[in-house]
Length: 279
Image (cartoon, rainbow, N blue to C red):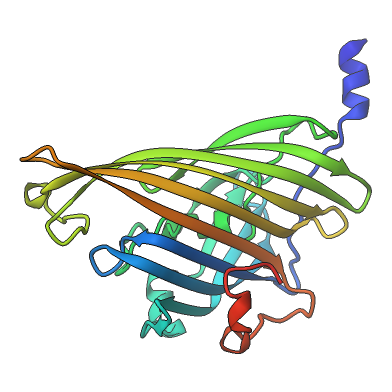
C-alpha cells in the first residue's frame, strides 16, 4: 500500500524537444581566479554561447534523440577578446546528436573526442549538451517537494556528482536546488599547462570542486527554462622534485537561459554586466 501511495504522490518529469523549430539557449560561463589558459594565469575568463536543441525521431533502440548545434560564441580573458569565430569553433563543437532517456540521462553521443586549444573546467566538448539543454536528470519514478536524488556525469577524466532537491512542483514548472562535487588529479609542465607527454610534467595538481545552484524546468514545454550554478575549485599544486606546494582557487559561474524571443541573443550586444549572469 505504501508503494501505491508513493506512486500517486510522485510527479513524473520528462523532456520534450521541439521537432519543428529548435529550442534556443543562451549560456554564460565566467571563471575568476587561477585559469588554465595560455598555460596558467590569474584572471577572469568569460565565455558566451548560443546553442540550439532540436528533437529527432527515436533511435534504433527506441530512445529519444536531440541534435544540438553551436550558433554563437564569444570568449574573453581579462577583457580582451579571443580570436575565435563561429566557423572556427564549429570545428571543435560540430553538430551533435545524443540519445537520452525521457528523464534526461544521456545514453550515447556522437560528439568527437578532441582537445580544445583552451582548457577550462566544465568546457568539455563531449558534454556540451550537459551544460546547455540537458543540465538536469530526473529520477524515473518522479519528483515531489523535498525529494532528493543524485547521479553522476563524467566531465573530462573524472565524475561529477550532482544532488538535487525539488523545492516546488506545479503543473507549470519544477524548481530545484542543485549541489555538485568533483575531485580530480592532473599533471602540469613548467608553463603550468597539461603536458602532451607525461615525461614533461614538473608538478602534480589535485583539485576539489564544490558548487550550488538552482534550476527551473518548464513542464508545459518539457524543457529546462533556467539554471545557474556557482562553483569553487580548490587546487593544490605540488612540485614533483622538490615537494613544494602552492594553493590555487577558481570560482566559476554558469548560467543557462531558454530564450523567450525565439532567437539567440546577439552576445556582442549583451550588456557587459550581464556576462556570465542570468538575464
